[in-house]
Image (cartoon, rainbow, N blue to C red; front, side, top):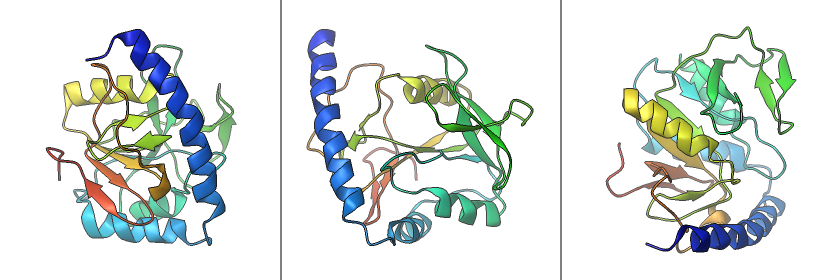
Length: 199
């Protein structure tokens, strides 16, 4: 395994390239990526009836996960969105129904209000900058999802599904022992089940 400083530097360099690749993928979209993402997810990923699902509020050129969250809510799944609880801490997942008021979090991302009940999602839809076929993702550098997945998986089986544009795939994501592996990556083109990941 590489030294931590080497991994950090490799991640920093990849973030710059990955952000450009994501911009290109978003710019090439014909407006139907969200609908295709729903189809790829539903035909491949098994979500037990009624289990809570956490999504994320898409920002910038992230692929739009909202159509998938609407479909899962329509199928009876309680939906949550992440709330940043503080630097170095796992995320809190609060119940969210489309139309609910939200507040702007520390990174300018819409979050459910403090009064919304906290829930423990069984399925986590995870944003990313880049992914590889081994199931590793490159995030934004805060470690929030890795800490959150580790905490959730310590308590119960938790399915982690990366949500991305197909163009965000890379040959290999630099990683260390703290990086949590995804079970699936779903893009507008395919649903990739990671070897050894949960169904």
